[in-house]
Image (cartoon, rainbow, N blue to C red; front, side, top):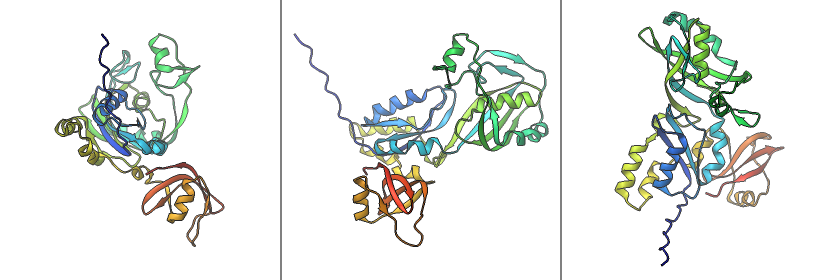
Length: 311
């Protein structure tokens, strides 16, 4: 006797951004899996992972919003983090083993005096336990196997680094605004070295990614409670989503007519009219009546679409 086949729940066509306040202790992929169970979307992905031992802003892109993920991943990020002085770990956070110790405890004046050296475009050696590839393998996989991992210093942009609070003599809280590829754990490690001591990150929270900040965040508990109250109906959960265009806040917008929008949706370039029409731009988006139509570039006054947005 054959078993009855399990009926798959249909996927929902959802477009937009959900800014999740990821809880501590959960991987980004695990958080995404739980969101999938709630919304059953046709397509979803996250704009940059967040370590399991970090909490905060994890933007999730649904449907057509996935086409705008690069704009978010390339945007600025703000972190608030606590550094505990006196010990360094092989992971530069609480997960690793202690590899060095020091009796030196920097005071606020000493810390503030060196922060300028860690702002602007600086060179940073990423942590050995990171997702950077070395000869095709992830650095953290090699490090866990006991292999010697040598990572090269690379340029990063730290736009702002401030001391927020001193928690006794052993711990200090910082806030950093930085660009893509910055490792906060490495900042803590290097600050410790510069101050003649050791340090590692003991708390980490991401406050902002691109245009998405704390005011946009929703917790997993809120979503799960709302889903339980709604039953099979996902419509009430749509109130937690932000429009696709929210990801395009820092991208040049080019309003077009309905006829021009039609041509753009067919992949055709259109000549931009008006005295204020830009002549050239590497990245822009065309919109009609406030709705994004396509991503593209402008060359010699013509908008050339590269990715059509079906909204």
